[in-house]
Amino acid sequence: MASPDLPKAALYYFPKSIWSTIPLLVLEEKGYAPDEIDLKVVDLHKGEQYTPSYLRLNPNGTVPTLVVPLHKTLSLEIESRYKAIQDSKSIAEFLDKSRSTQSRTHTTSSAPSPSLSPATIAFSAVSEKVIALIRSDAANPNALTILNGHDEESLRVVTEARLWVLTARQQALERLLTDNESANISVSEKTRRFWETKKNSVADYLPVLQDAEKPTDQLDGHARQVRENYWKDSKAAWFALRQALLQLNQEIIGPYVLGDQLSLADLHLAAWLARLVKLSGGTISDDGNTAIERIEAHTGPAFSLPKDLSVAEARRRAGLPIPDADSNERQNRLAAFWDAVKERPSFKKVYAEGLH
Ligand SMILES: N[C@@H](CCC(=O)N[C@@H](CS)C(=O)NCC(=O)O)C(=O)O
Image 1: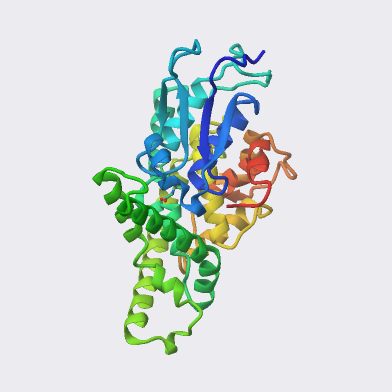
Image 2: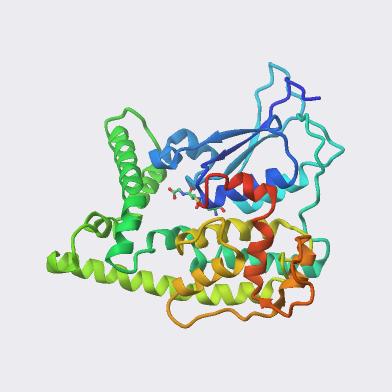
């Protein structure tokens, strides 16, 4: 039975943020009930991640953050003490360890709570490697989102999706900086500098998006150069992704990272791959081969991952129906992963409104 007196953990997140999606998937896979954790939206589109009150929870100004009460027994006189876990990897690990089917604190759920941690040292090494690859600079999905314009047409698509978000974010930062100057709010020099850095971080690409409606031959010399630099960066970023894809494809046992059993690394990979499939023009209904072919083509010409996993074997390990058990068909491991993970109820629920 849920006790109304005990404080609950709160997950601060934004529904379309890739790194927030990882704890959302963990909550589903672990069988957390809606009454176990408070879900609080931080609207990144309004710059809520930069407000002084949110920065006290997470000085990086990012989502997700999990705020966990430290004292299990709180009386009204005792001030609550919390710890804030400030990145998706640590949050996923915490959520994995914090729910067993035996502990019913705060919950009405009796759903099974499988362990999502690797069971052996060797598995742990694979898992860490996969998570590190996904979180490496070369694989940064948020950078690839901005750098997803490859020609005038695709630049306009990026602009339509991102320009208003970046503009709203810049305006929120401007407002905070101005309010601070006029003493409406007063923050430390460190916070003020943080806001300035954030404002400058998109300064290079904002003008490219602002000019996206103009054909290249109508741009002045400077704007044309800025657009050229953007093309170069976007091409280089997507090309560099190939190495990460090759390495991931090699590390995964298949269809899941550790073979037939789901672990935290899969939930990192699921969120990351979902974003890449979307950026490459795919949808949730694409099968694995289609989805990964889209990504391969999106990184530039003449690239494909080795197809070294038996489709029938991958489907058997994932518990999926096997249309032709005698078939010798092979697929790459990321394709097998996509086929397996997109059938999971957690994935269907978190991506109910499409990939993001
Ligand atoms: N290492 C962090 C990265 C979190 C992150 O970059 N989150 C993005 C959303 S996906 C964010 O909050 N961006 C807001 C901003 O940079 O202003 C984690 O894994 O939690």
